[in-house]
Image 1 (cartoon, one colour):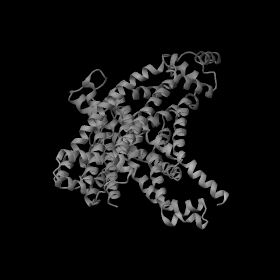
Image 2 (spheres, one colour; image 1 turned 45 degrees about the vertical axis):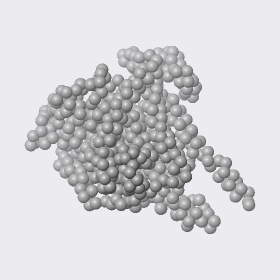
Image 3 (cartoon, helix red, strand yellow; image 1 turned 120 degrees about the horizontal axis):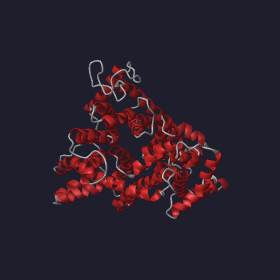
Image 4 (tube, helix red, strand yellow; image 1 turned 60 degrees about the horizontal axis):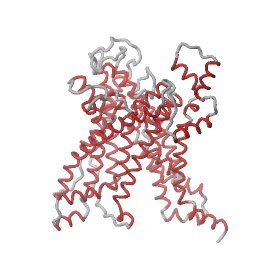
Length: 587
């Protein structure tokens, strides 16, 4: 055995098992350092931000700025301040607000309690919604009538992003019907609409996933055996749920993580004093200590929720997974032509919307403020007298154009990072546990709200699913006999990647990235709605919806029209992903 061969063997036996763990630790440490250095990475003078927040009229002389730096300990270098910040966290001190001068951590922890309560209510709604969707599937499975659910209800509910559903619920139940309070957090009635807005999309997704999973579980032979043996229907149902749940735990974890990001938008719409709204306000005011603390707590919540889902999966699988004794389902699902009807209709309606409004001016205020729809103004005017049809049509091109840029950047990053599966373990896991809204808060803290900032923020998290897909495909390709033998034939690492692995991986990952285009557009719209994306007067869909919210009672069309456009985009994203999911199962 040569020295080089012995060295490779030693590395594979002693170092390789620890690479994923080291990757996770280094990624988490990098995120903490990034959050800790936000005040200096932003390129803004902290002393100037504090002065402007305290007194907008006082002149920013060098002497005044130096006094502020000395008072708050800002005259030290960034790494010394980072060390001080980390030591403060260990002792329960996250610094003082640049705006109020009060300690940051107590207020943020109080806001976090509100957010966790809201997320708990939302998760309860999600469980109830998913249960109602799955009941017909379980009933058919127990009766031996196994067939894949159409998923229409689940897909419809999933196609309503939290910020969009919150706006619609606010219009209908608070503004029109006056049944529930529109804003605040002062009792149970104030939690109903926010919990519905947060839980219904999550429940629709969970119901869609579980109905498909249960349909597959009821095709396994043990179900028929248990029926013949006389087991009760309740016991068979519980066993089917236990069998289905482990394979879906990663998706359940992602839904739970998604509640973290969704809560930010819901809190903003309903003016709930939660952690997301407090962090969003800190980003807008450039209150860096509050922004640091809010982002850190949000990341901790997201990572903990994702980790709990992975632990739950391992516990549920138990010995069956370790012994390779999991039963196999029969894959008899196929795509029907009618499945393409919904995405085709959505594309057609979006095309008509763009075609009819693209020739109109989206910027000039040529009409009366909040003018209702008419023949000359088919969709009415917004709060400044601008044509809503023109703005929504141009916004479609703006939003989808930004989404296309994000997808191509994400594709490149996903392929590059996914080609090193073990090293990419940490970045992929941490990034998948980071909702786009949290990334948007970080980027807004660094460079302020902007279209380019929104593109960077969504790209920063959108690459992770593509990298995970790439890593899985790389592992499959490397396991093929004709690829495993190439090193023995003298094929180098670069040639192996460029000639054998990358060509086999690129096609599936590219198709995957294209299917994520509508979902990426929705993420960009969410950032625009929260004020973390393009600035006025940009005709971006999320921004258009946010601009219409103050006029929700006087001119509901200013909210409903962009909301309907976003619903069409959401339906398109969910219906296409459902079709692709069936195709993967049928292979």
